[in-house]
Amino acid sequence: MKHYDFTDLAVPGVRQLKPYIPGKPTAELEREYGVSNSIKLASNENPLGASPRAIEAMRGELDDLWLYPDANGFELKQALAARHGVDPSCITLGNGSNDVLVFLAQVFLQPGLEAVFSQYCFAVYPIATQMVGATAKVAPALPADHVMPLGHDLRALYEQVGPDTRLVMVANPNNPTGTWLDGARLKDFVASLPPHVICVVDEAYTEYAESDRLGDASTWLDECPSLVVTRTFSKAYGLAGLRVGYALSNPGISDLLNRVRPAFNVNSLALTAARAALDDQAFIDHSREVNSAGLVQLGEGLGHLGARVVPSAANFVLAEFDRSGAELNEQLLRAGIIVRPVANYGLENYLRITVGTEAQNQRVLDALGTILGQSSGQ
Ligand SMILES: *Cc1c(COP(=O)(O)O)cnc(C)c1O
Image 1 (tube, helix red, strand yellow):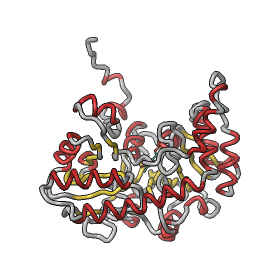
Image 2 (tube, rainbow, N blue to C red):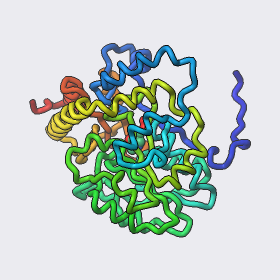
Image 3 (spheres, rainbow, N blue to C red):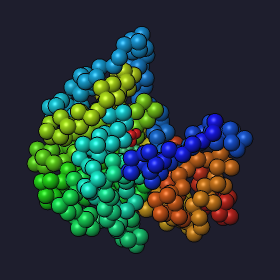
């Protein structure tokens, strides 16, 4: 069909908007490159799949798919409330936590108001901000030679906060860097923000964090009324395809978020699966163990290849090479391996690689070894 240009009709925030660039699905790679046996280490999915309990629970839901889902997600909220020791009225369910981030922008931002986040933060924060026509205030990240290279700099973030700031968004650990903030310092930062500022602490990867050095922001809600904590079932719980995440906040905030939330934003299968997955602690523990071993394997292997690996508390590593990440990515695609080039974040010579199974990690290390023309040191 002939493509007409309607850009002038779009609201100002949308005119310049560049959509989120997702990882390529394996089926698309296989179609485009004529390869088979491809692997995807590009979207921080759980290489172990989903909790078997979640899959079993969804089977029991199939006969009821003709019914609309429970718009209030009663059972999942009850379980989450019990898990976090909060009232169900503190919870906002999202079609992935991405959904909740968009609600936050819709509720608290508009042209003339500002959102503060860090350089190298999760790409959804600037997108949600721009979409509603608000202004992004970007704090410089920690330098590449810092112990937490490219990580969030709380002091720099604080300096960006002004009278028009309504949202500050911080991921702990952060994507795409994998870096993290000390929990006690982050809590002090949240508590120090003026009352007109809502602080979002995005804990998408928190189940992977091995020690309690990152803290658990969901336990700060009583002391920090303007705090919003976001969580997701997409990462450690292995349910990325279902789209379910949530926010924990003061009920005064969740009340507002739920006003813009489409009533049926979380589908029945997702509600049921998330409810069952929450109880499968053995699956989470096993996922964390496999991930920790994989972080060591990828860290050492990439180090042997001469890459500089950013420390990670998540299920991926960001590595710097002495050549273009886009070129390396292209060569990996030809070898049937999908990783994430991050030039769109301003990280030209870097790749973000999701921790896979031991065999998948070895495959990406071997392929990179061949591409870089040296052995992987094994
Ligand atoms: C993956 C990710 C999310 C979660 O996205 P969903 O919409 O829940 O799948 C949120 N924040 C960060 C930083 C992420 O990397």
